[in-house]
Image 1 (cartoon, rainbow, N blue to C red):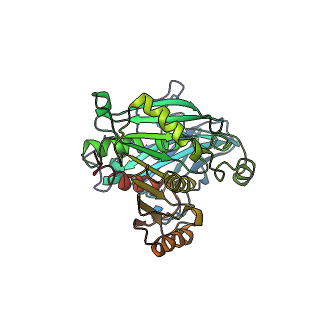
Image 2 (image 1 turned 180 degrees about the horizontal axis):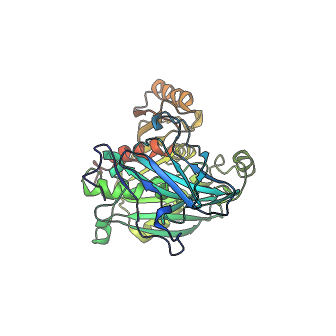
Image 3 (image 1 turned 90 degrees about the vertical axis):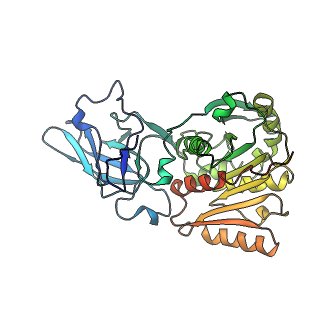
Length: 380
């Protein structure tokens, strides 16, 4: 939990504190989170020839200028006791992921029990707290529940994993709640928004603070053929060429059947305006497609760093559109082109401009802002 006595800008914490059963024996090799915002990474192996830190924090410049979420590699140095270490510059409050590379083999930190999968790799995770936004990334309130389901659609004959979040109010017996479908990007799957996006923690906290309405969150695997998301060692372009389901509307066509299936389990609200959809990058494109294909279904569409073209330009003033983009995003010119087309068609939208680029740092913020706009005026 947040340390009130820490530096006024940083309250640094690990998500969990108990080590793995197979953790390295000496506590001296655990990573160290300093109050000045620096982090000391350590790894014990006196027999290793080289150890590198693979880290998604920018080790050279302020994180606000990051345009894409690339990982940086830096050599660690070994002391006489066989402990390899590296100390970062001051890091901004954020969620960070990392791993070690020992003689060419990548492994998560054995002293840090909190990890997620990023593409085909298992990455360790920690948070530097210190802002109202990062405070939302850790649960300090009532927890909702997550279920993982398998949906076998008949429209495209594919099985998809789906994570469904229900808020605390659902466990208390409240039914007929509104639903937000939250879609991942090109390299993700159903776990992306939960693992990297912290969507469940954010929504738990916003609901507890009465800043967001209680809602059900559906996070489906919109592209089950994506080999990168399944952990395969395959190039991004090769994945797109071989498995182009992003562009052939597979998920969009199976959406009605998925919605009926989930509704039979969770008893969604059937009131007008009780559905919304949002997505990041390629998932934003699919969100726009859904709104056009089922034009009376969704009350709001969130497009986070959208990869969208002329086919995604809305044809109706309903639903409400919300666009989030960083001025360093490599798709920013294309996003502005989409905005101009919407303006020419007199399609209203809300624009959220931020710094930075095509990154989870931004997408967590966009989800936080967008989710607070939903379901305040559901019609009876």
